Length: 91
Image (tube, rainbow, N blue to C red; front, side):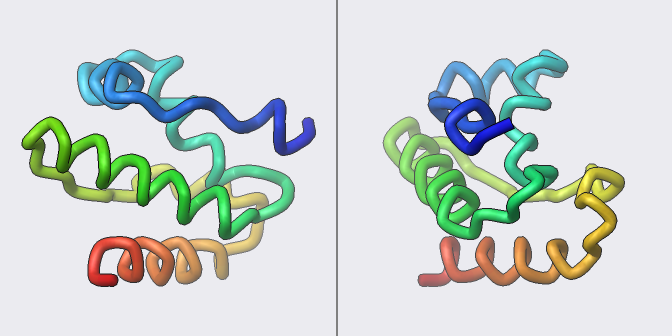
């Protein structure tokens, strides 16, 4: 699956659906962590878009990576994900 097929438009509605337990929305939101190619730019954009959406809508946000079984047997992705998250949040 190419990057185009794996990406999706991150919207407030998608986040809201994921928060309310919609499995498809959760999978769409988390899919980038399990991409065959770990694309840091895609991950960074996801964080930035999420922060922007939450800021515009007055929502608090907390990033929690819970699905650690889908990192394509590359646990170093978890550290990189955390690093990208901290940069997005802290600047």
